[in-house]
Amino acid sequence: MTDTTISTWSDPDQTPPLSQAVPLGLQHVLAMFASNVTPSIIVAGAAGLAFGGPEQVYLIQMAMLFAGVATLFQTVGLGPIGARLPIMQGTSFAFVGVLAGVAATQGLSVALSACIIGGVLHFILGGFIRHLRWLFPPLVTGLVILAIGLYLIPVAIKYAAGGAASFQMEAESFGSLKHWSVALCVVIVALVLKFFTKGTLSNAAILVGLVAGYILAFVLGMVNFGAVGNAAWFTAITPLPYGFEFSPGAVIAVTLVSVVSAIETVGDTSATTKAGAGREATDAEISGATYADGLGTAIAGVFGGLPNTSFSQNVGIVGMTGIMSRHVVTIGALVLILCGLVPKIGAVIASMPLPVLGGGVIVMFGMVAAAGLNVLSEVNMNRRNMVIIAVSLAAGLGLNLVPTAVQYLPGVVKTLATSAVAPTALVAVILNQALPEEI
View 1 (cartoon, rainbow, N blue to C red):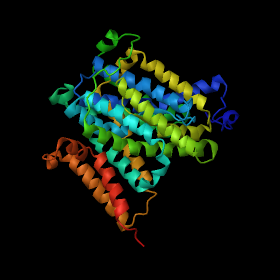
View 2 (tube, one colour; view 1 turned 90 degrees about the horizontal axis):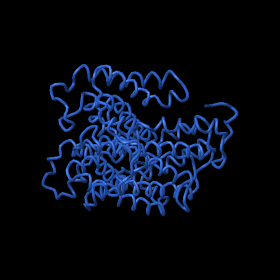
View 3 (tube, one colour; view 1 turned 90 degrees about the vertical axis):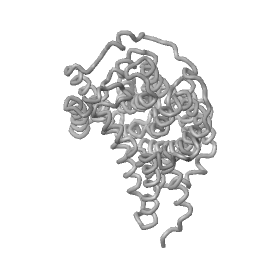
View 4 (cartoon, one colour; view 1 turned 45 degrees about the vertical axis):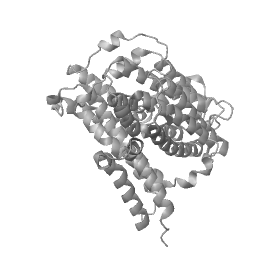
């Protein structure tokens, strides 16, 4: 996709011919598809929903549908909403730790209600996000992204080994060679494609790896297509499928992560304009991108979807192709919306055995942690900053690993204290403001 005939498309309002725009739009979908549906599968599992069941299928549908809707908010725009740039939206990994914890202890109704309120607050944040950027330098954002990745890696290993009791997997088969062979097939195929191919195959490496693992799992008799056969071709979406239940702790936790997500979106917006047009993002583009984040998250929550954010891997596609046209990404958004309205597609994804998903998320979650390290590489590693990193990670991950250490805290505070991401972010922000700079 690096043909010189399309390498000069640096204007967001221009559109390449359909013969080039459609494949480019599909490339954006392939690059983010696996990462987009995975958080819904994890949160559904934490909530105790049957693996491959209709409720999980519905959550996967909503992930696809509202990633497309939120992307349209970004690319087409609505008044001040949307950056009107080629920014692909998708379900955010940043919220997985918080929402999985809330779903496991208080249920999906509380988790999704917190997403709705958090989305509204995220939307409001769009009005003054540019004034808060000083609170979140690379030291803080890098720490938070690293904490997200480190929190999720044990989940990836569990999945690769065959799941857990909550997914009704046989305890004696956990960690079996059959499970690990499938997971490793995904990892190996993804790595080979990522580093030994170019273009669409390289960008869709994880997705193709999942397909390869899926095929191997089918050969080994691990795939059940019963739910696919029972799923309808089209279905209506349901507002508030689990009702509305307010929990202050869940709302605070989701809102804290929303602030970090908003800062990430600011970075992605700036990276998009830099990579595709060689300029800095305007204040209107930054605010519009944040508005779209918040609105997409709130509307998704109403119908059972998880929070949306900009996807960094798609920024890389803009830089690689040189195609800045927002209409290319709009095509990708329409593909996602179509997928979200077809339950059979969600059922096929839900029929994926856990070891297949585990192989994919080993790579994805590891990359989240690596992205955090990449951001931290911009930081001067003096004694002050190393202390902030040490204390923030120790507090965030330590309390998450040993939740009984704060078992006597009130429910709201305990939810925040054991969420990994929220305490890491809070401690990092406070220490970064309180500790003097080294001379």
